[in-house]
Length: 345
Image (spheres, rainbow, N blue to C red):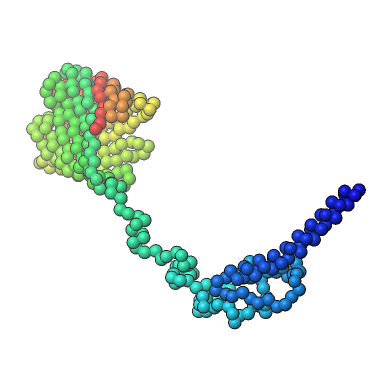
């Protein structure tokens, strides 16, 4: 019992001693905080009892923002750091001065330690980086051998080709087309197109230029104009009209489509129709629909740039063209087995 009473008495005495020491320390701390404001001298306190009540102590916050107006000596306050002309429109109170006088786009004063942004700062933040400019005006080139194949024809073995390529940018390009056939070492058909292409949409392009026929018959030059591009679901289409020597006119419509059986195995159906405005017996061409060709080729892309293929090709002559073909002792319809390679650069 004696020990317990001694511990209780000792604890009470310790609390009384701690409170008696803490009261003057709180007063001194408040005075020291007020004196820490370099622009304002310490406020003289009126004579009070040595100890402050807890209600009075709680009303004194850091910076004394909650002190009553009567407790301040305004004659000793430093008002030089405040510009009375700068008023906060929302509260009607004066705003704190700004050493640099900088304001943002809304007219709000900015802190003095943030300098105004200059053109030199923007240039330093966004320098011109060499080698990272836009490349839309740089010309590129592409060459595709869509068909380079052996054909098993009735007259013997034949070598046929069809190629296309371009040079230029995204909007304007120079196009090159060529197709032909050699049978038993003799060139039966050969032609070359040189066209200027201008994009008229994301998938379509107007073309115009020259077509030169070397065979059959004597060479002939055509003016060419047309439209090429991609129709629905990846169907590639070329429609071209021609105006030749002697008032001869012609038109050609071509279409092809790639069916992806796997990522590397592709089935390609193709079709071509040729029309002429009038008969040309020297070249064995009749008016109207003169020829139609269709083919089906299955290729395997060993690489995207190189793909061997096999397939079949079918062709037929119509109208007066078929009559010219029969007069020369040839069939107006034929089917051939083909094997070749498709490659591009």
